[in-house]
Length: 166
Image (cartoon, rainbow, N blue to C red; front, side, top):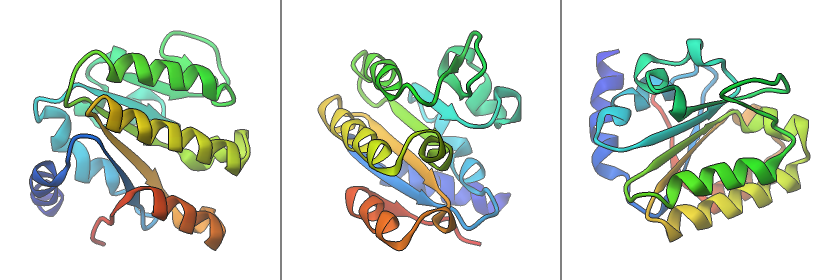
């Protein structure tokens, strides 16, 4: 955990406004540990995750307004993963109300299952454009084994790459 904290501190200085980052997971779900300190870095954060809010680290789930659970269930803080248009609007509303805002999208594998890869890729293109337009930061976690080589190449081409150490 100490290593994750050091990486997080270094990472906070490396993230640039207006950029999108692909966090390549190695199957050990290290991204939240790596990113844990960033939510406290004076940035407003929005986390969209396949994980329910009570399974997220406290620094990401402390503000219920800052967490969206991607689920087909209906209720407060929940959004349908098949409605990429509504997700896009929610993220845009968040980003346009201040600079240095950060969006963490954890669960593009799930979005791809619930939609199709091309739709999710177009969604990510739009989010990258919004991060640039509103001087925010977009962080997207991905498990490479869940995608074909061509799909991973397209994801890697769109965003800067961050790989947690194993």
